[in-house]
Image 1 (cartoon, one colour):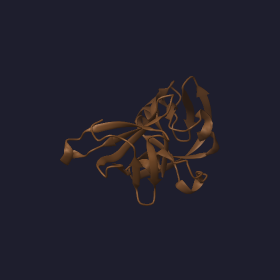
Image 2 (cartoon, rainbow, N blue to C red; image 1 turned 120 degrees about the vertical axis):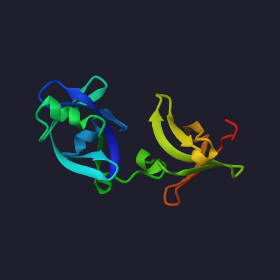
Image 3 (cartoon, rainbow, N blue to C red; image 1 turned 180 degrees about the vertical axis):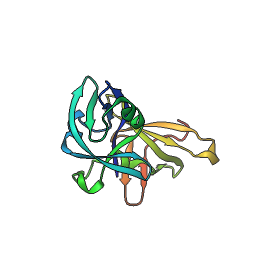
Length: 167
């Protein structure tokens, strides 16, 4: 499963949901008539009945979510689609979900940590890299730009960056 967004709140009393997409464009989820709702390894396929853009979120009516209580039970769950339903990214593109868990090292061979999240700032995407519990759980924010990210190997789950270990 590739996480494409998350349900943030109910919308109205008829079972509609507010969804915050983690996609390049707001309407990318319009391409998928079936969404998988859940977390971790617990997913349930759900048919999308209606979907529209509302300000900075999507509002969606899913099958079997027919009132506010059912919508409230969906709050904080993730929206995903099967990996094989997505188009293959081009050579310099990556799905954010593929970057999670990638080990980041700098040019001096210092391990900076694992990528735990990716977010958009408007200017560029940012990698959240965590050193892990054994190294004090230090989080680094590293810009995901060509000048910084030198090499990405999704198969090996490694990334080489031009970034000082003291940052």
